[in-house]
Image (cartoon, rainbow, N blue to C red):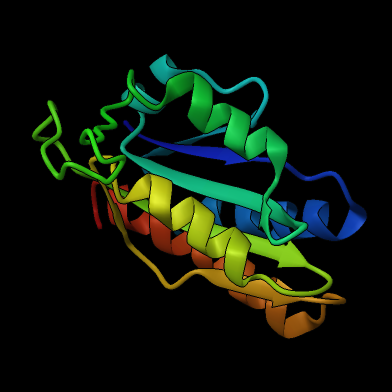
Length: 165
């Protein structure tokens, strides 16, 4: 059975609602053969990432950056999950793993989301991951469209790793 891992930091009601909508999509009854594992960013492990066939990341945008919890997740797991950096600090592009997994990202904030998205994508560029869906950027209050897009993001990642996908 395929495994989809959702690593998130959902400190607010808004981010929690987005996470719930993403999970609703990932667990949609029409998608079979996918186990969805949900881990708060402060608890997720490298072993869980390595066991996953796809990863969804969720974060709030804090002071123009990803949440500290998601950054801490990357700090703790980066090298163990295949991250590689050159001596100049840039992505090496050469990962030990030849297996590339799809990932998705959703970000919520009240002001600017640019720095938060950029910071996650900068780290992920040095991992053996490929973005499988457009980043879901939600600025301000949630509406039905944002929740629908979150559901679609979860369903897209689950469908990609589904045996029938």
